Length: 540
Image 1 (tube, rainbow, N blue to C red):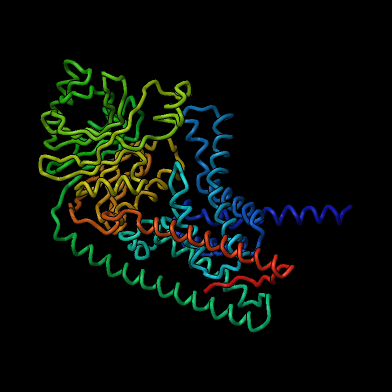
Image 2 (image 1 turned 90 degrees about the vertical axis):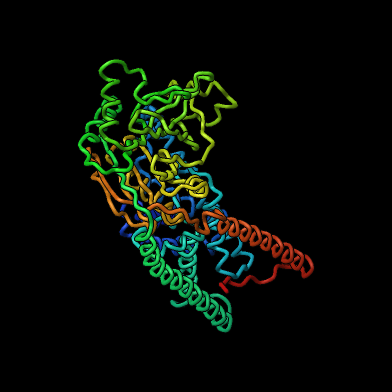
């Protein structure tokens, strides 16, 4: 009985083995300084699926992904409770379900890698190609990418101005896959005769040399490019911005922002208040001091703007009275209380600003905790200040979406400005994770990224990805910084996710080649009356 119990425990332990590397894989989302862990964790992921049957590989990689998502984004259930106003009895099962669904990306990756390996597919590059294709195509509410784990290594990330965030992730997975092939050969992996083993080792060494050469080239380019961009910034037109972090509830947010703004020194070109600072304004209104205020409150608003002598970019709501729809908006207001322009959020937040499927099934709107019906904006055009600075506005989690920032830069934005309300995250690591996801937008478009948040993380990120100024989390604060205005366009700004689409095409070719090989093997099997011997796959 004890032997049977011990055997069962060993079986359970073997099945739970992917949990440990999955937790390590997510470690950089909790502590960015340990981003190097992503490389060996990727090697473990590839190593534990490449010799497994596809179904078993799917299960192992899926469990790896569940552990990674649960570790990195443990706060999702609390956000669903606070933001979507779901009860804990609902929010926790929903969070578990979301983690399980997102982990299917890992499962599919493991299954495809194992399936191609059983067809003797020898090129190691198909592994990072498949990973990048799935990372690009797989839908996600909070769009994390493998390349974003390397913020501690700025030189490695500079290639993002060509490939977006997918280039660094591709190289990480290439390095991990090469390790997964090379290490077993070096410690004496068996399979085939000695000549075949030596051939596999030669192929794997060539792949490792190529990966090291590409990684070294990327890092060398990165160090050179950082210095080059910093030199360019010294010659650009300067723009002085004051960021207001009220760190208070919605009821007192506008008053706190006014109080903090009144203490600013003169000589500021723009003042930023975060998302959801003011209430709803009619879509056609051009008087910021109007609102529903009268008498003393209205005069105080107008007097404050006159005293500040600088335009204010502030987050609020726009109401389309003809359709009863609302927009999550940013208002650019001058010192005379005139609204110079508005930006409407283009990507609405699921379960907060809209309920998925509600357009087809209107009864689902009853599940929303908010009475307003939100509409998405369509324009990427920047807002222009009286001094001529063009602001590419991003609201809430839009700064985590590469395409939203890219379209703003392509439309002429000289600086990217994100207004966000991260109070829903509470005192978790999620606010810093939001900034970690957004930092690549600065490198991809070579623009300063200004982040103004209610409780943090309020920060300014340079075009090289460096955090040049950071306000303390969860405290009322002001942050005044000089930034450079840039109007040039990077390769990524011009061509978008071309690199990712090439990986999608490469993954499709690899799968098609696998089916072709499978068909040939089946034909040989039927012609010879038996199955041909299978050799252990190795990389080219």
